[in-house]
Image 1 (cartoon, rainbow, N blue to C red):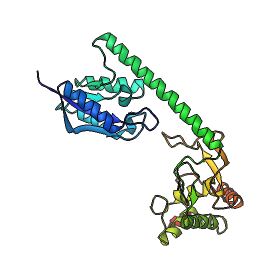
Image 2 (cartoon, rainbow, N blue to C red; image 1 turned 60 degrees about the horizontal axis):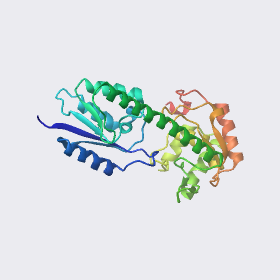
Image 3 (cartoon, rainbow, N blue to C red; image 1 turned 135 degrees about the vertical axis):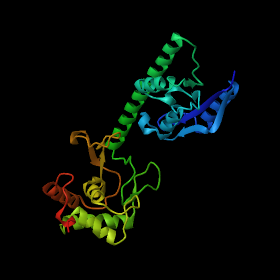
Image 4 (cartoon, rainbow, N blue to C red; image 1 turned 90 degrees about the horizontal axis):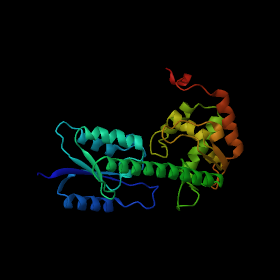
Length: 291
């Protein structure tokens, strides 16, 4: 009987404190392959560093599935450390495993060996249900912890233009040259009546960049104008992580932050008043953009 060709799928989760490192997972998977007469090519090792619960957000996973579904059937089995590394939701797990089964590709968890037959399938479903329950419960606990931190005024995201994190766990500090850009934006918008587009064009003419090192756009100026971090506040839970949809305002948490303010609350409020008075639906171009 010829040796089976295996590929390895390695995924780490930043939320799971009992997680094995990628190197440890790889070592266990290669040991299993060797003991079970399986061949593993270097091209058939997929390592995921993102902690996505949904397969669409895992590019290496998608590459692996595409490989397994090729007409040449290059692999016979996918090895994972735990079934939870393959999928954290039962519906998705069943869909992908059924898809792979049509091409005679099995998914094996090296730390959760199963017996053949219907009883083995039942045990596998129970393990998947437990993993999904754990994932949902864990995300709820993470949410509660982050909400508590937000209510205490702790910063929990990448700081915006004007700030940087010097010490982990401590509030961000002001970056003087970036803070000057932020003040310019607020003053030109509030006191000089410039549009977002014109402010972006002005900043780009000076060669200034956003916190991502890119030229300013209308939307990047609008984001700065609406960000209460600059007047010493914290705004948390504004958007849905998976879709970036802006939530209803009653779901937001806005409170006094621990970081120093770059502008006064009065200047921030003046900017908000002008924004509400002059807001136009998305897609409507300001007259200054037309020739």
